[in-house]
Image 1: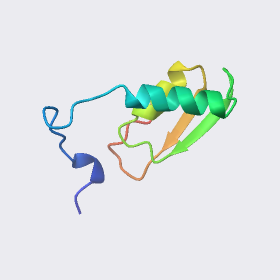
Image 2: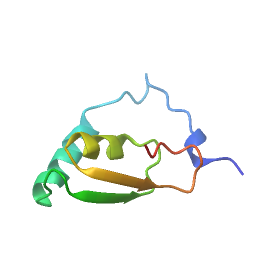
Image 3: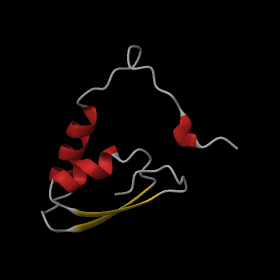
Image 4: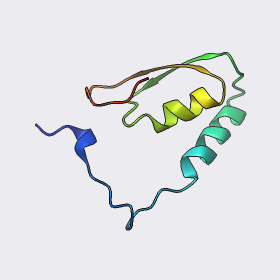
Length: 72
């Protein structure tokens, strides 16, 4: 069975945007998160949201079924 993280994205057809940063900032603010809080993210995939929550000052832990997931 192919790992779901083996998907290859075409950067020309679907370029990266600032959406992940905007989403995490919105969730951080509306959920009244504070620096130093702990957070568990199930299904981290490529880890971009986990990294952004960490950059916002949270102590993060991630889980995923794929051994290729970026949980650190």
